[in-house]
Length: 96
Image (cartoon, rainbow, N blue to C red; front, side, top):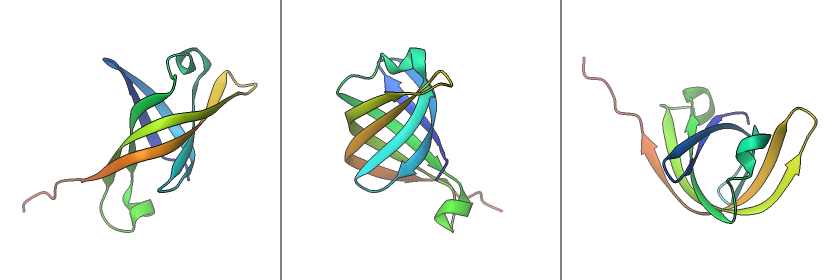
C-alpha cells in the first residue's frame, strides 16, 4: 500500500510514503538526508484515502520504534518500524 506518511522529529515534519503497513509495523521511504534524524522511537502519521479504508478518509497517529534502515539507489532510505501504539483520527464529515 502506498500512502502518504509524515514523520515528526521535534518540531520537524518529514514527508515520506509507505510501502507496507499493518497494525504491528510499517515500512516506508523518505529522503536519505532525513533518515539520519530517525533513531529508536519516533512519531508519525499515515493518511489513508477512502479507496483504502472503503469508507471516509482517516489519519492514523502512531508511535513507532526503528527496526532497520536500508539505503537504496534513488537517494531514499527504507525504514522498517514496529508500531508501539496508534490512534485513528477520522476526517470530520461536512454538514450540508
